Image (cartoon, rainbow, N blue to C red; front, side, top):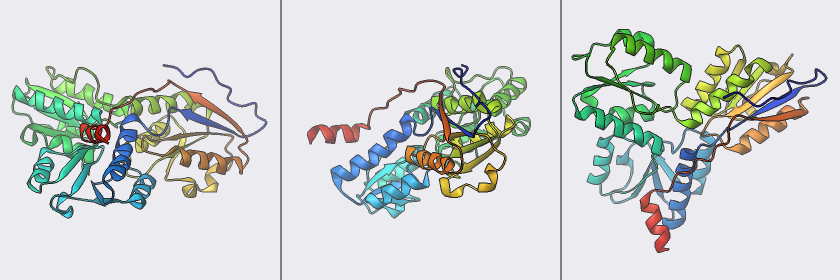
Length: 325
């Protein structure tokens, strides 16, 4: 879908293109709400396994509110209350939670849950599952954990070339939800060349928010000299936005906040595009825009690709408690 018409500037001054949609997706909103509501209902401490979403500012704010972030469940007291992050967990983690008698609230993004369910369903007919994703990412670890004996992880086309699958007639593929659309397309094409009978999910696994933000960057790339992406260094979808900008010939940088901007980046720049990964708070974007305005970028235009109105319901554990309250 093309961007609506917009003016690339009249040459008289410096301009900001503020891309929309940007920032929080529905899964991130839901996950953050889960922690806040749990703190309100039960009071601290509420333990959160891993970062609830991949953003330093969000995690720090929730920590200040009383959330305790842990790497593994053995750091949670027996019988304590634990929240699973938006990225999902493997069945082994759920088993450990049960063994420790933990009161679990699952904040896994429903779109990640969809991939988990697909993995289980595909495995039932004996298929091998090729998961396209980034090694050691929390989401990938959780998905691989569903059917570890039948799953293969690939990150590149070269990985596909090195795959050795016992029965090449029974192969399925899935993807991490926060990948680069273009890179994933190339990997899938190579999978289909190597395994002509391979099948994927009924609908793509890359989430709507990831796709929308990448398409917006593509649409504005020919009109800007610089792209600034607000997001944390461990945010997969934020890093992919930088890659998309780079691939379309735009100097692109990932910044946690305005403090990461090197003013040398702005030298000779007339038009700068600003966006944010799906776990970056809007106030960080506004602060960055103000930073740019104080450095001569007085003209701004918000460019909207598509209106996002996706909402996810809260986990049943919280819904029941809220109703009772």
